[in-house]
Image (cartoon, rainbow, N blue to C red; front, side, top):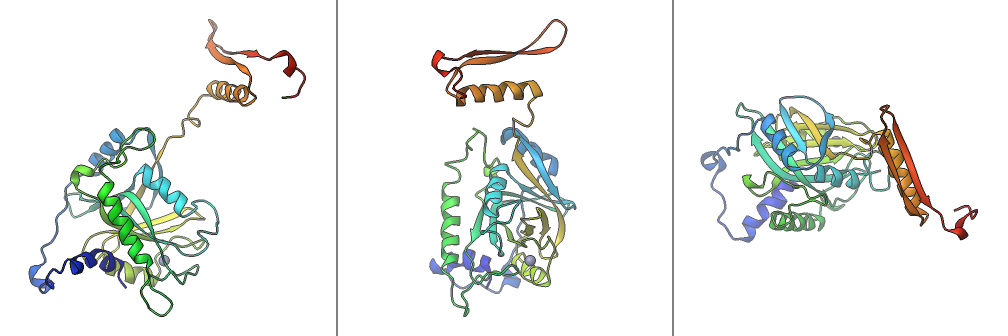
Length: 295
Ligand SMILES: [Zn+2]
């Protein structure tokens, strides 16, 4: 069963639209807005706040950009970096976002949101979209529901918790299905025969990204379109401001945290003296009855 068929063709059926004419004669090749990697990266850096390209996987002229909000969703969804009860069996998911052309036959994909596909009959090497006897899986209805809900509200809530833009590409239209992925828990990231077969079918009409990730080993592999063209996957993350702090700033922050956590008052300041050396001054106010209490 084809997820994109289930999710994306059902609405047409429900709307009672007439059966499509033979595709060979009526299908127009869809064109995508043209943006170079430079343009995409500059739009991301300009709008998505204090971020960095935290991880890169693979190579190729095609790119798959995972925006910071989506990367954080992803890390939680697959317990990225450890074994967990959630990721010990194969997980499937879709990515919503935008597709761009590089103007030279290449494709760049931007992922703004992930939704896990509720699958059944899972093992570490498989996960079924259908029930044990091939019956319908109500999970696919939820997938469609969550996807529609996201698309309906994405433009109303496009600011993240840090005041930055979640998806700076909304002017190019609503998000759509741009990635289909699954996990290989502690098996490594590679294409199995089944992956190639199902991926080619999924990307037959639109050059979406076929994606596989080993969440435990933190390996990723992305390909574009039915011919599995190689792609470089770039994941953006927020810069951990604490990591970028200088040693003195860190000491000042830790000491201040320590004072607050113990319910004391006072402050810590660092300053550079005339000799160029940095000094740290702690002004700590300890109440009489707290002295010697070991707090
Ligand atoms: Zn696989």
